Length: 282
Ligand SMILES: Nc1ncnc2c1ncn2[C@@H]1O[C@H](COP(=O)(O)OP(=O)(O)OP(=O)(O)O)[C@@H](O)[C@H]1O
Ligand SMILES: [Mg+2]
Image 1 (cartoon, rainbow, N blue to C red):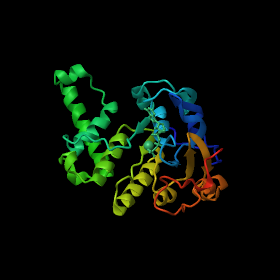
Image 2: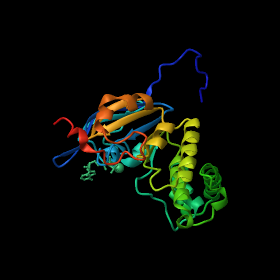
Image 3: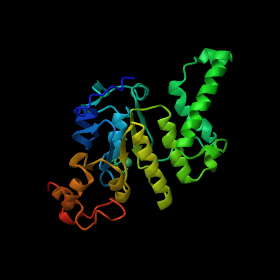
Image 4: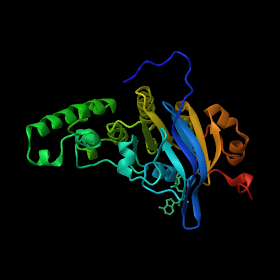
């Protein structure tokens, strides 16, 4: 690893660059010529009303959907059209809007699944139960414990995931994604359904992830959670970028104020903005 950085300020290179990205479903443009950048090391919030296209953007970046147009670059490498497993191997991990943990596996086993990208032993070695495989298994298990600790679940290692609280399952899911050692982590509404106390733990976890050098793109409806956490905010509406900037800039942005007229930015949620200002663009 080259940690010899010059003291002079480096121009931050975007880790993620999205250019003119589009996705249509039949006649519906879910994402419409969307361009934005995410700098290495930042936590960036992707917000907007229901149906704005946030999850579709995640599905495009992670390769679950092929774009109808445009390009996505991870540190200069074009991702559009690649298979999800290739994009994962290039360093993109994600969680899902609907919680996805393996309920009938233990917490530790869940993390081990996420760790498999880093497991070197081949299938044959595993099938033959070769010593190299057993060593590998031990290493994966040890590594998994570190991520379990990160999730705050060390004492629940052997508990079935289905017996964990919802908040614990969310943290487990995030740390399973983290166990693949991504450069970019996409979190789709990780705060949904959490108690206030669990949201605080979630925020702490995301900040720790950032300190470890992982760049985070976060979809979240809880404005307080987003604004207190992120370096930058992207506001999406009808698949287009309505505004982008620091939380302060975005909250002052005339288009954002107009779109959310009648709702307060310090209200609990960005869901269903009142259309008091009339339909955008007429
Ligand atoms: N697989 C699909 N087939 C058809 N239409 C889709 C598909 N996925 C998303 N859409 C449509 O694309 C638009 C954007 O959906 P998307 O799920 O990306 O929104 P979102 O911003 O994540 O919303 P939410 O906040 O409710 O999660 C919506 O109109 C949705 O109905
Ligand atoms: Mg969504």
